Image (tube, rainbow, N blue to C red; front, side, top):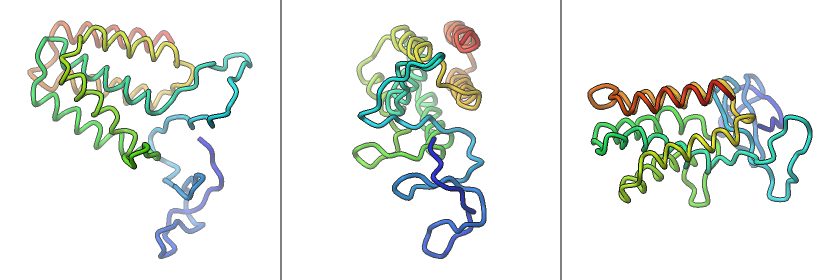
Length: 190
């Protein structure tokens, strides 16, 4: 995340923050409070060269791809038992609205919050009747590839959301439990 300058969150009357409380101001005038719980790393510019220093990931994490993969994980948890219930769909929508959207600063090319990519991907997979195992494996592969770019707050959000979807309909079943255990193992290793 790039911090151009820090100012205070009190409004100047024109909807912009005044220089009295902590907010981060981004290129183009977007801003948010400094104490937000998590944010994804800045997307690199289109002409950015891969970093090759020790520990640097050659595959920079892309917000939209992260949210797409996150939708795959949540779909896999909902569909692993062969049926996605309305309660699981409602839980996914609540997670996006309450846990992802408030922390995402960027919009997609349609002007929608990029966090809605999670919900869109879930819906597409549901419509297609996608294989839960393939979706879960896709998320695990993505996280393994981008592990160096993750941080504790985002990991907690992923695990909390996974638990909520798995528990949405009559608690966690045996298949969902297997996914949750594997997810925790993979995330702990990295």
